[in-house]
Amino acid sequence: MYLIRHLKQVLKGAFDPNIAWDLPVGDPPFMANEAPIGTEHGLLRNEAKRLWHFVKGADNATNKVQKEKMFIQMLEGLHQDEAKVLMGMKNKTLNKMYKGLTESVVKEAFGWNDKFVRPE
Image 1 (tube, rainbow, N blue to C red):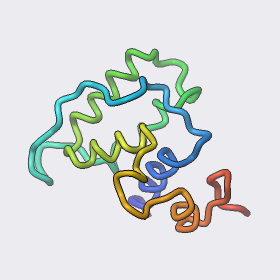
Image 2 (cartoon, rainbow, N blue to C red):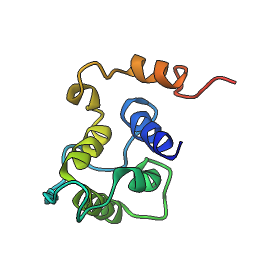
Image 3 (cartoon, one colour):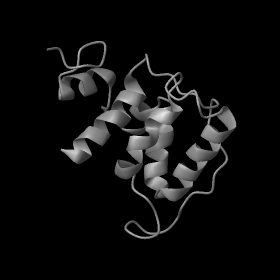
Image 4 (cartoon, rainbow, N blue to C red):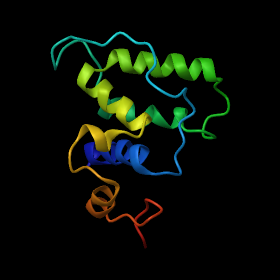
């Protein structure tokens, strides 16, 4: 259940047109973490709880420079493959990274309506 919740956050961030990222367009400069999977890096499922900081209008206490630094630190702490997923979410290009992953597939998988919420 824990993993599904964070997967939903990433997919919603990638496909929901109402979510705008308060980060510069494109890929930030960061050093990819080349450590083997399972060593020396964080996990996207653990970092997902901090994604709200980067949504436009969600965290007005943190300035843009701090947000950019936090995002870069997050990217550098993740395995390079998970960092690519995070970049795909932010750039809303996950559908280009994974064949068959579309907005309609995501909505159907989680029972979401066009507002990316589950109807009551």
